[in-house]
Image 1 (cartoon, rainbow over the protein chains, first blue to last red):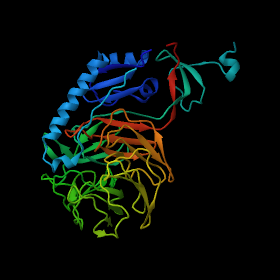
Image 2 (cartoon, rainbow over the protein chains, first blue to last red):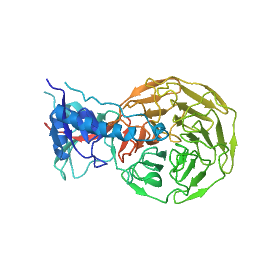
Image 3 (cartoon, helix red, strand yellow):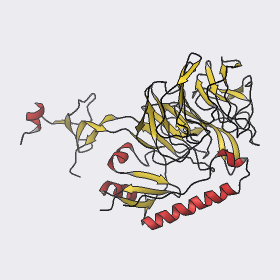
Amino acid sequence: MELFMYGTATNTGKGFFTHQDRQDFYLAGHPGNVWVIGKNEKGALWLAAKNGVSKTHAEAQAIVDAEVTAAQEAWDALSDEDKLRNGRPGPITLPYA
Amino acid sequence: MAGYNTIRGLRVRYLSADPAGAEDGQVWYNSTTGNLRVDGIALAASWASGGNMTSARSYVAGGGTQNAGLGVAGYNTGSSATGKTEEYNGTSWSEQNDLGTTRYSVSRGLGTQTAFIAAGGNNPSSTPVTNSELYNGTSWTATNALNAARSYLSGFGTSGAGLIVGGANPRSSAVNNSESFDGTNWTANPATPFALKSGASSGPATAGVFAGGTPPASTTTSFEINSTTWTAGGALSVGRNAMGFGGQGATQTAAWVAGGTPSTTATEHYNGTSWSNAPVIASARSGMGGAGSQSSGLIFGGSPDAGTAATEEFTGATVITKNISTS
């Protein structure tokens, strides 16, 4: 049984995800407006209600990878001094089950 | 099967509006909305989305409460350092007057939405400075300067009885000193038993807790201040720096941290003795602003370097009224 589904949706702010949503299904946001959502009816309804676009795990991972690569390239281009602000963005592996 | 009348000794009431002061387990029919309603349904503690900031940024300072929060300064790759100030009302952010001197990584957690101190930080050339300004809910006024320039510092207490701790100068070198603010002047204090930047500060200046920080990036230590004496506190489960925390809105015996570097969604609560895991934030981030209490927290902005506008609100476990349905 698959535990997660994946999608893209823009965080519109207050009410985008609620305390009830967090109780009803797993939800984790990632770069590129990618969301990993617990695979149940309420999770699916949430993504649809947010005008989200359903993605496969591979598609979602590719979006995140592209965002991380862009962030890493931007970090690499910083001066040594500016690199002190924050560490180099690390890879993100979306859960798959 | 026993009916509601048998279980509760009451009939399901037919009401045009939800009753005030409903009891746990009470059921009624709301004729206006056409819903069968029940009170007293447990809702677990969690983070939910809040209104997005009007200006995305990281290295933002925060203060106040969940429904009266303040976001100050920060850094955005496109516009570099920013002195923008925003107020949160529990629903949305609104832009206010900018800091007089543009900086980022100013003191975090020192004060409220209507009385906040922004001390130190990096100027637009990323050099630590001594500037200090007071926000009164409308505008910023310069106060006397810090004795020692620093950025990535943490703040405790109020604008009339404040404390700043740690930080760095230059940016790569953490400092082990602190300064107290009496509403007019900053006074240098004896050295702290730690040299850390980007740690979490919670509580008043004379009864706070300082957690995490860097170096190293995964520091788990915490230190409590009582009057003017620092002692070791409980260790974080997840070492981190540049996390969200409650500042003046939290206390030494009810502090919290969320997110941070290395990248994590972990939230932890402190009870004055030990840190314990709490519900995770939805999106990992660092360098965000924070405000509020352990049961009513707020994080906003943060990494990546370009900054995010996203806000999350924490609400402790509660009971709510819900519709009764078959789905």
